[in-house]
Picture 1 (tube, rainbow, N blue to C red):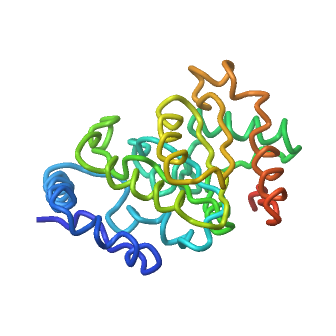
Picture 2 (picture 1 turned 180 degrees about the horizontal axis):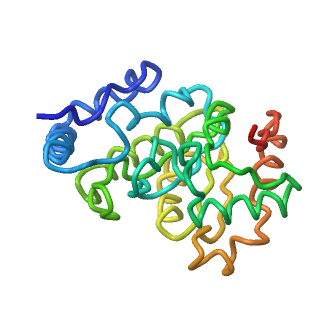
Length: 230
């Protein structure tokens, strides 16, 4: 049977060990392994936990909640909204760049590789971490949501304040976890999803990037550098 996914990096593994030992996670691992044996599954096994590798637990300053990984060839590499260099910009990411330019004056990059954001403290977390090729939402309700809800909860439990970024109703449903475990310490930035279906209904003009940075500065932390090298 194919490997389902690699191991969590140490900073997360020591905090999520109880979670990954639960029966549901064993079932999830078996499901993804079986899917890989029969189908193409994205992202590759080695990149499923890329968000955790690039943003260690103590380095998280912003948590951006995505949904399902991109399901077309060579797009998904483990960070929400990001695609590999050389891949055409997905519509949602193009809209993110439009708002970034409108809000902060940063010129739209020619690529969609967002790893520099992750390396600067933005945990880029999809709520489902794998998908069957060309079949959106095919790995929903298999256990990933339980796991990523625990990740959101772990970040909410931190004493150091974090900015949670919730775009669209599915992401905003996570607010109850943040409110329950966060003790009011954190900031939450909400807007419509950047998808073409909803961007005009409250994503464009939200100034979400300057909101995030204002919250960080208010916490006594440095702002995020949202620029992306060509």
